[in-house]
Image (cartoon, rainbow, N blue to C red):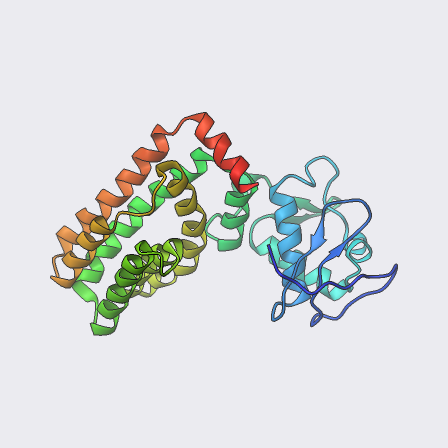
Length: 273
């Protein structure tokens, strides 16, 4: 996942928070993954978060701070901070006489972009993809309507540029996935509503996975005319039309997911492996 510098830790050796490396320990598959510009703490959060979500600790229990420090060759400060961050994401909790334990999935913060990404990446799931799309149905049409009402010239230009990127991508001159995501994020930004704008990281993270999967099911990329309908309605300041046009896009995606067979789900999982 990360293109990282690699350093090999010797037994008992630790690294500062500014080091970047990928470390495998013992014969296990767990690694600390980080990259230039990303601290060791965040690399450890990434590795432990993925391990928790994929069930690595379901049977053996979560390690103690000392065990993590020894296991990963990281300082106590780094492991302590990583555990705090994972606790804030709802994945861990500290209990008297039980130490740090993994919380049930129902307690995980799905609105945290990291948690949602780990869940979407662990195994392709039509159910989870449908649930996320249902959430989008409750957010994005309303955002399109707000953009039609509230967008300033900078917001409209952002939507215009994103739509042009989609057209360029259709000609093979840009990445279709990135262009599609940029369009949806541009609409959130154009609402001028800070709560919608703050969803951009969540939407960016999840759409990067969900659009990739739905494109595999469809065998094609997003419909540019459908996205043009949304943009044209926003440019015309027609909030109702913008809302309906965005709803059409998402209902089409949701119908596609619901109609997909288990064989399609298994094939998508194999491709992403």
